[in-house]
Amino acid sequence: MLNAPIRDWKGRRVWLIGASSGIGHALAKALIARGAKVAVSARNGAALHELAATTRPANVLPLPLDATRVDQLEAALREMTDAWGGIDVALLLQGTHEPVRAWTLDSAVAHRLVDTNLLSVIDALSVVLPTMLRQGSGGIAICSSVAGYRGLPTSLVYGATKAALINLAETLYMDLSPRGIGVWIVNPGFVKTPLTDRNEFPMPALISAEEAAGHILDGLASGRFEIHFPKRFTRWMKLLRLLPYGLYFRLVRRFTGL
Ligand SMILES: NC(=O)c1ccc[n+]([C@@H]2O[C@H](COP(=O)([O-])OP(=O)(O)OC[C@H]3O[C@@H](n4cnc5c(N)ncnc54)[C@H](OP(=O)(O)O)[C@@H]3O)[C@@H](O)[C@H]2O)c1
Image 1 (tube, rainbow, N blue to C red):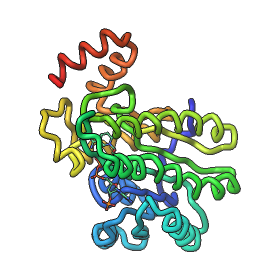
Image 2 (image 1 turned 180 degrees about the vertical axis):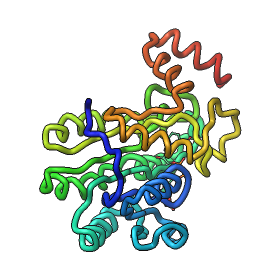
Image 3 (image 1 turned 30 degrees about the vertical axis):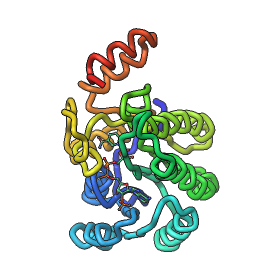
């Protein structure tokens, strides 16, 4: 078993970044329903306050922030630890997507993707790690994507940020596991959220945000390092990962038409 399984969420102090919509919102609701104390972050403060008001206000701490601002991340963790005395689990689900191809590559878009998907995760780690290392306990889950397995058309920068997160999580695991801190990498396939609602192509094996949240909870309860779903899609993506470049490029072109 690679991580200590988390099965009982009652009273666990969780910080979930990316809780205002999509997978993070559904996961926050599921955790609150299981009795966790959840500090919820994202830029959309109204959505976070509504989440608190419509679930268990005493167990939900809305901490609106822009995750690309390390000072805001620091202030939020301070507020959480002042309120609850520490942090048990950090769930880093913040992310954004914009399709980019070689001929639409734009520096501002690329920086936005890297800042939101990669640097904000690194900054959040730099903020939570001193506390978890001092405690000698905790767990961190980072949301990447199967788009991080290999290059895919339209994912010119998004895919690079997600590949970097997988590498980051692997290295983090090796450092933190001996110190009693769990690390998970979450690699979803297609999930229906505001992020994918913009996609104009048919998304195979599309699941709901609630199903995705269920898979993440199952994964955290399983003791595995990688949480990937839905398996009927991600298993194929894992197989593609093993192919030599010539075959991989041909198959991707055939399947996507791009
Ligand atoms: N949907 C899929 O098919 C899919 C597949 C693979 C991986 N993923 C990954 O899953 C994660 C969640 O995505 P989703 O599909 O649920 O999309 P979503 O509904 O757009 O959720 C993204 C979340 O990230 C937050 N966020 C974005 N920028 C932020 C910032 N600067 N500061 C703080 N929070 C920020 C958003 O909140 P605010 O806008 O309020 O800040 C929102 O809560 C992402 O990492 C995404 O890459 C999704």
